[in-house]
Image (cartoon, rainbow, N blue to C red; front, side, top):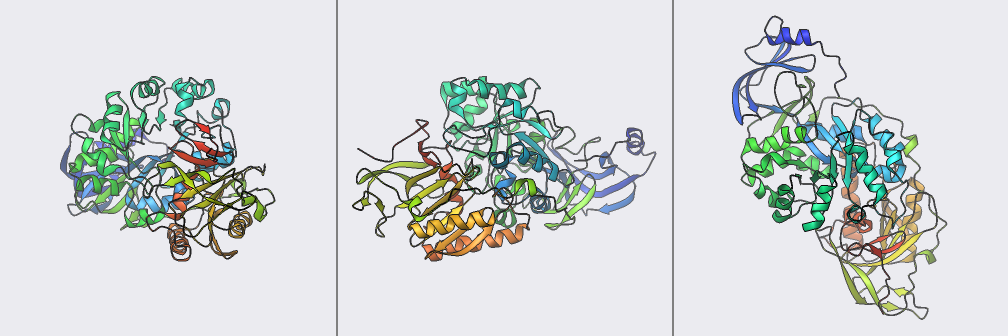
Length: 579
């Protein structure tokens, strides 16, 4: 964030032409997001702020050659941790794509390291050419049916609610708690509401009176819309819709059809979760703009969703538009349809050119958020699932969807009633091991749809409590994978024949690496490729991302936590045995 003290008298003198600007971008086609027009002219920058638009002279001048000049792009909801990168490496990845501000919800690291994790995210984001604003996590843990690394009540959140980098309360995922008027959750909502700070939502498939209750509680946004009906229901209640285009969920092509002259001002773009390969290959919010235009949205309206709408929705003063007195967060694009970001300016300083960062980042101390994998002593027997019969409840995975289905399947057991994997059946064991305090909890279940054979895959990314989750068809491989992630402090690993084939180490809370986005992307691609080639994982399933969501107890229908099998619709633990 721009920490310079603005000399307004000097800015006025530059605006009136009595003094020369520090920088003037000449011969530009300037996009006005307020009036939906493009104006030819020059833009003057001084002290990191926009001084004026018109005929100006500067001590330094850049001729843009008729290219388009726009406000820096804003991601209105993102979990930086889901990029697998530390904040500084995340900045090096997204800033060259024109993103100059993000609204981050650090609930991933908060579930592992509590307030210490949030403070780490805030502190490591301070000196970056990317403004990182935070929404305090409202659901740590996400549900009472799992064990996270921390419990953040209203009193704990109160320690940070007034921090200058904190905008409000993060996505309220525990809808059942809200609907029953849970006092603890309402206290968190009041913490933000009493300060007139925004409250984010997370309400897939909530409708009717339930949605009215959600809105009545003060929730203002939703990024979980996947259908036009859901989108329209929220817009009718005055909620803002954050149109998501990430890695796991891609809703833009469907929802953009709901954006028109009457609804556009209530919409903005977000990525939610996006991995480094997709950012490098597709883009970030610039990709959302391009995709919206490809799907028929007017180009300047698409720019509005990516800039001023997000800024005004979150009260980001001085952001989202090119106007005097605003921060000089600027991007230069070739034209408004191809929307290739060629230059990025942060507070008037050139920080990226041709998708390449032109800034260095510090290497912060990660000691407070490392060494986060603490598990009980395990043996092969730890992964043996004893059943009461040959009928069991199985988690059915739908490719390219976060939604799972509750299925009942006939399975094989040995004389002791222990589940036996059969190669001809696509049913593997799933284990979720509490990894924060080593309390000994191990949830065991069954999954179909991965088609995994001959080994195991495991990760410490298991939304949202981020326990250690393992999918496999042999005790030896599941044990080897667990011990490997304990050794390296977290990440992703793959085992076969009782041996580790590869590991992507994520030592920061078991979620992130401070290596470059390019290196992490290459390592992730390599370990995914091994899962397909060595373990025959279904090519329609993302091995590790798909695995990471199998523990998330807020998206229907069936999940597994360290406490056992969880029915999201009934919001209760259920028996794996079918009588």
